[in-house]
Image (cartoon, rainbow, N blue to C red; front, side, top):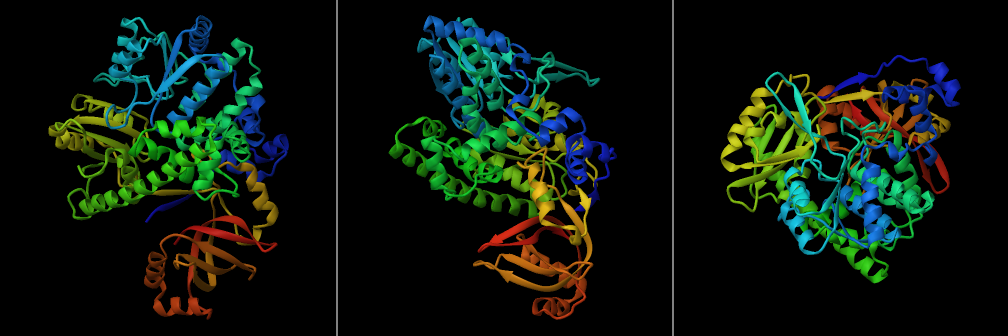
Length: 589
């Protein structure tokens, strides 16, 4: 069972409330998200484009823009090398459309997930040379591509890296880190140690957007035109799961406004194909509906389909591409469920059940969905998880990992560098490849060096405020909407209440998958609570605590002894012109 914690961050909420002109409740929630700087709080509550940081503060950005500018003037050929995921797609679209607007002779290539793996490689560099390319610019990759970048320079190509991933380092026995970046003509990454850019958490598309802003200024294009690219940048920002604070919050808020009024035929077609037509597109729509469809092209087919979808000006083509992406995503879902069942069975049979770090080799899993399955297993068992599967080289395996907040996966993989062929990523996610003969050594070392405690491996839920249900009002719910869009780094606020009595319970929905509880507040008012998770598990928990007879009474609306502590989200239910307050139950005990 998870542990519940009430956040208790100290701050002068009265002062903040007066300064920002908002309620103390909102101030409290911001402080809970470690947003305490008044300038940052202001941009959080009142996000606007004029609060974006100066892109010229980014190391090497002017150097890189000068190279592109000179190439455009000379009529040179430019090639973008992107990545096959949503952020990579968004970064390609941002650079491509931006450079085309400036008159560039530019094209793009995307590494194939299975044939090439992640990022720029020697084949791509050699093909660029043979194709008469003068300048290569990477996006969402390149910061660790030392050999391909050296090859490009040796072949006489100019090469610019735009990336946002962590900088590679070697750690000695004393824990000292030696960081290194590739010797490109320009390396643009806010995470460079010598980069003074004030915000380090941009996604790949965000860095590309900053690049185009400077290029527009240099080429005499109105900076306002760069904002047209924000619908792509917003998709990359949400789908790459970076923190939605500071600039990312502004990008997503502004991008969503444009997405909901989009004139892009491809985006219109994808919204229609996924059943979102006529609905408001939000971060959930991007992260869990549209984004997975776009990612599916890179997983099961060619990522070029997704880019071409957003570039086409032919409506029939757009519909064809969109329907293809939707079909691919449905295939991906089925493959994921099948692979997930196989991995769960391996764990439940007991071979890995006691390990702190799960490293599971399952050759039947398609390598493109290993990361998704790793994420699902990590959520289910709350342990860092790496799923390994076969690669095109029979002696090698490839894998993807997903982590918990208590475990820096990138750092821990760095300690196993001698066992790995390649690796890269973030504290929370990583990709890797290794010789098949090293799997057991790799698993054993990760577990041996893991300093995870029992408490570390217990899921934790952080509650913003203990708020009795009697305090919920329409104005409070509307106030909370100021905090949208929600996502990583800006999670939806969670409230809690103790010892709630249940007047009656109902199971609703075509698939009987919604639990509706009539809850009694301390002032004996009724409010609806909806629960969308495992109803059978909920029932068994209540039966074990109070007995089946009391649960039967609850469902019949008879006085019963069932009492719950709950974590909830207050919402407004609007139906047939009526508005009612209700809560969504997230957790119970």
